Image 1 (cartoon, rainbow, N blue to C red):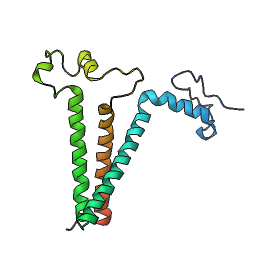
Image 2 (cartoon, rainbow, N blue to C red; image 1 turned 60 degrees about the horizontal axis):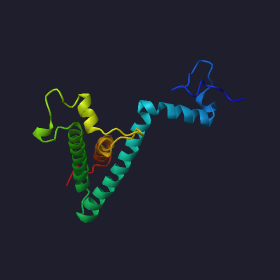
Image 3 (spheres, rainbow, N blue to C red; image 1 turned 60 degrees about the vertical axis):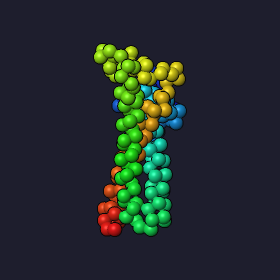
Image 4 (cartoon, rainbow, N blue to C red; image 1 turned 90 degrees about the horizontal axis):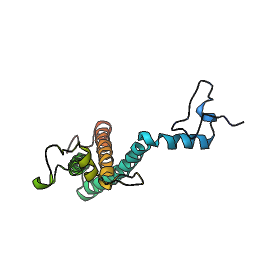
Length: 168
């Protein structure tokens, strides 16, 4: 007999004390629960983290190739990783400023009542997509921030565990 967690049409299935452990729940029920949690932003965060990991991997390989193979010292790997991290944070900040309308010319800014938090400017800066997808600029910001965080952790681990960047 298949356990029932609640009405699958509801946003989240009801979990009760009588619910068996999650290892016994059939896959379609777990998938419907994951689809229901899409509204909370958890899958978007995991997607941004994954894309950030891809960007971090490419950046780390590029830094390794330039630092060790081209320049001949692992010290440059420790210099290039934080440099890319800083570049990603700066790029995310500039994309955020562009999205909020801060970088528009003075004539296009409108009256003070139409600041970045007003619904009029938000509808103007974020086109309404009927499918619910975010614009590429809005989707790139969390990816860049996740990648910057991952590069910071990677550079710290390389310094602490392997001493890369400690000496020239």
